[in-house]
Image 1: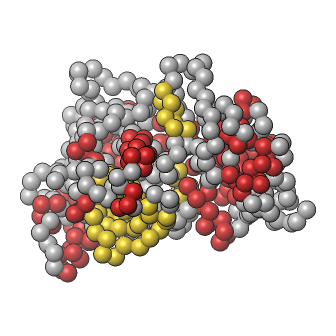
Image 2: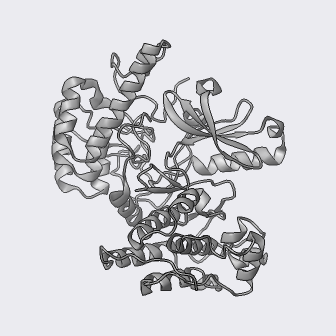
Length: 479
């Protein structure tokens, strides 16, 4: 079964990186060879991202087919260089035969590239550890546009635009018209693009990394790549409501493409047990990280908050608003052990709302989410909207700065009740930056209409970061 979602590591027949070349290698030597190839794919994408033309050239001199290496979304090193405007890297890749019109997974799709999203992409597209065997990346740049020239144009890299056009680069849509930015999410790929044959999943060295009421999450391997697999319990695979929730999460994830959102790779829906496959993030979740590290210094806390806010701003982008409804440290994942990049995950309770215009009201009722991070209007079963996520964000920001969960002395239900009665956690840390304290307080305001949007939160966090002294730290003391 062929997956069009970036599983191929090269284009063109006869490539030493072609999946067909390595598919039949089952010996120990074959597996070792496959792992080495995947690692080199990761390296060239990493060096392209880092603007290291010398390292890219060295790899290509040793193995020219790497110029066609692909990540999860079929994006090549030239896509990466084009997005960042790395001219020297691009020239090197073109010299070694890079296809200037290589298409990513989405073919003729030009996805949500409004000004705000491009700002996130330009500042946050990143990769994980270079040595990770993950078919190109872990925490890698996502499938933003279809061709390298469109990447360069979207990022306004004028020198790169001229270079790619010189070598025949195109950026045209299905009807021949030039691409235009449209504030809509990517269309749902055809089912064959993401349906995974369960026989391709290797659980021989798997380990459980999470459990839930419907099943468990395991670290497994898919085509030589470490992945996270949410596997529904066999006993629940015939439960109508469970199946409905599972399909709901798949339908949400398959539409999401952003550097701060956990990347969906595929799902098993035609056989049992039902499984959902995403990228595997080695750093664990923010809950465990805070449990081990305690309070974070302001610089780290702000960087973490920016990552979360970027992902949430993307989810809240109208006219297709996705309300997470269960934003908490356990659902925020660290890309690697260096803790330099976070992603928002677990969309099991998320709600997709289609809004016809920016003035439409889209409100729900019901008690959904985790009590300790729950907005008061949710606890009270009142109408609510996307600002419930802003409230949860405030609680996470508080926890990162204080080192303890909000209202840690209360049981979760009692904490939610306490908050619903108008109370809030007490700021205990010395030397709070006034603007950061004000932002936190506004984000957990009892009146959801007074809470800022994530786009506003991003602007304020960036400003706070710019004015932050490099040696600004504080310690916790008990009130």
